[in-house]
Image (cartoon, rainbow, N blue to C red; front, top):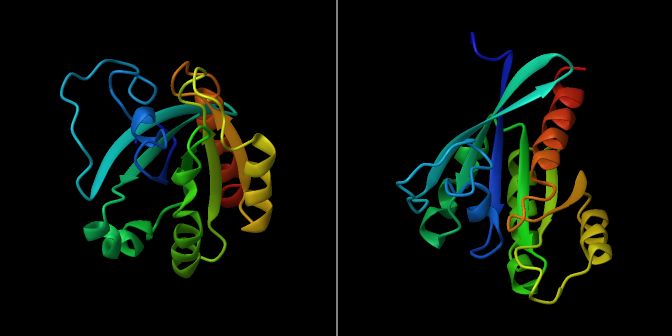
Length: 177
């Protein structure tokens, strides 16, 4: 591990159009820092690495981009083994992207009761009106006893780096205090 001090595993959940796919889209460079021309669809699971500096150390977040296709759902519990944190994305302009939230939280908690789960409200476009308010997102965090609520925009990049920093901070505080 010469290029980092720790590697943490983070699973990404989100319906189609939730913004999860934009976060790991190589054309937007949020994860890789450079352009990757061969964009592929997630089949089962796709992996990405994101480096984060925190308290003088370099951490790598290994992002497990889990497919939301029905045929791959049976593999999700196996993919969650060893995961330190789960991020669930929804689109603030599309309430339907929250339809699977309860199912995912239940599945995650069956694998690991005290999993760090972050709900991310993604504002993909500022031209489309919000359908889910920030307050409603916070209410969902309280209802399902999730770890944190964060809002980002994969359209503008607002909040994306802060999301990775917060995820890393929460993992370090829980697993390496």
